[in-house]
Picture 1 (cartoon, rainbow, N blue to C red):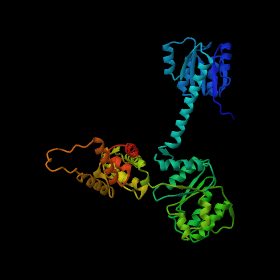
Picture 2: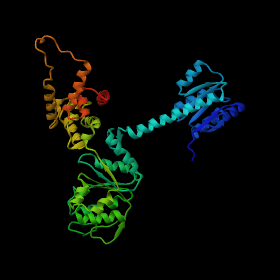
Picture 3: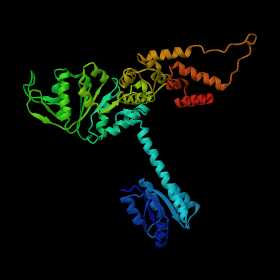
Picture 4: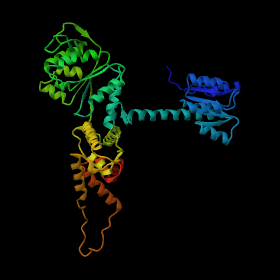
Length: 467
């Protein structure tokens, strides 16, 4: 199929229409022609063109009505007005209703071509910007919250992996959102209308996990009073997510490998071979290769599952996301608890950015819930911080209370203040803040109450000056 943009010419004069079509004959677009407003409206309803060359004086309606219709319906169509009855007022009205450009008759071929090329180029750039924002500046993605670069990379991998049936192996520390990631893969793929079955292998007793995955028949073991369907059968047609898969005992790993390879399994105590169609997604908070090296995880199973690896970054590597996630939880829990919290004080934000969050998003979630449940108000203050965040704030306070370095004063000049260039004072302050924060520029920026981009830009300026 051709990718040339479609251009529709609305012109009631047959002779002028032929001239304009000839002008555009060699342009990289498909140009068609209608001679009335009614026909133009029909084309807009059935298949809107990329660009509409619109004459205002038509036999059955005013072209301005078509322009208003396009704006009201928010149709993806750029309009170039062409008219012999031009005036400043008409041009202003046309632009107010969303016209891209205005050409007054008579005009030559070059004027029409340049105008059309400019509009098409502008539309192309708009599409590029929209695509960039959609793919590289996403602040939310299914259950995820965050626009940091590490998360943008995760989103793009999910976009690519979701339509496939290939097995996905998710790794990451506890609390980073592995089940959220698995659900995002399911929701983004073609199986979204089918079941998503999640099973935590670490939370099920080892002697029951086989039954939980494959099911059992009546009398298979003590307490099996009836036949039971397992997660594998319930996930038929959809996605089976096995969390903490490294906790699975070796004997069951062998059966799982056969299930992944063939799509078939037997219920515990049963003889019938059953077949299902499932998408496998698994996860672990351990290092799977280390588990393989130590003999706790089958090497062949690892390589069979690790087709598309996704590593979820810890929260400490997502500085740009911490406050966005915290604000989301603050709003959600305030609504649940009937509280009025809506923001954090600046020093609380600094404490959040300075903490390493070993429990990741889950820990942040619990901290915010603790604050909302035990306190009241509109703004979260440092007195509301639970342990260990209160200690983080205390450490920040001690750091800020340390006396700043003073320039030595020459003997005999005690009464004369030492005046240094402003840029040097700024440079020293920024470098001290970055050093005090262990090189973490976002934290230093929060303490200095400026944006991280300001610090990056100033550091680059200093480095360039030294070259």
